[in-house]
Length: 439
Image 1 (cartoon, rainbow, N blue to C red):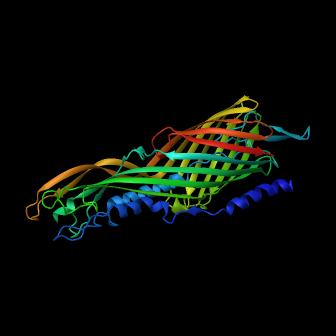
Image 2: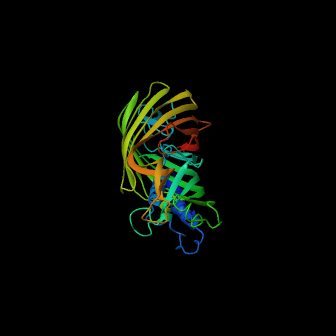
Image 3: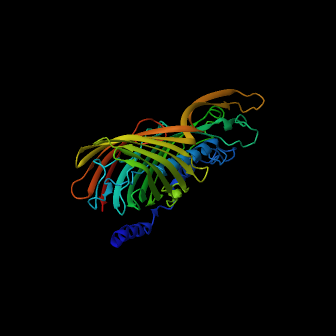
């Protein structure tokens, strides 16, 4: 038993000592940083003041929206659901025979939970690897240049409008292509402290990569007639494209888990579950949230022969207002197709409270084409624009997979996670492969 206890402790010590690797520039600031560098205009025509940075001031409403978009992306990327740390093998002690026997025909859910515990003195060790390439956030296609930004000119004379001087009516429109990919290898361990209490830990190793391209265009709403060359990119034209790329890897947010079985019979059970997600990942490189999160919930499950339905309901509280609280409900079933194969299906529902919701909406911009402030000529232009607003938002994911017992107490898991709606950060399909061992 002493050897059994030393093995997981040694593994976790090695994992906790792994250094994070990252480039010099933080991934969190990649988007805002490369836009500030890219949206730089050429020196102005003779007789006009410099406009080189007039569209990218810190007061720009669109940069404020982009910063909120960044925060939302980082929060959801860093808190994506991990596979269950519950062991596939569960045992109960038979006092008549003096041995442990399997308490379930099924190997249990993959992203859900069941009320059964693994058994007193039992260890479950595992590793799972999942890969995500995110397609959308709140229905906005990240990889199809659907993320639209409009940068207005700085109010140079502080008159509260973009009508005078006339060149303040120009805007820069930008279409962003964004590829967000992450890979998570999670080392998990569970230990049966008693017949009713399991303690567990999940240590994720995370790698993140961002690829961004922006196609920007100067819309000369105000200056097109009076001074058509006042606003130009460095290439001399009204259109410019620029790219940026970054990656980071390291330990993500470590999750400590506990499950206590309140009620248990041969046909089902009820348990309380809790986990604490520690801010061990570097939030500057999108490896973690930078916030401690605590979740409590209730687990209910039944055993109807080979068929086992389950449901988990919980509430996750974040220690800082920067991260939205979350109500989660996961429901599904697992069924033993044979003594060595289990099929599992789940629906994962997550309601984020007062989160930053993303949309792209048409907005009308007003300009004055006259150089004479006393005789303005008003024109308008309509462009799709990034909008960020706080609201409650529900995200739904589906999960289908198999657990296979090839030999001994080893389990191999293959699973697919897929989107069921367009809310939150979404990947159309995310594969998972896992291996676990019980002793």
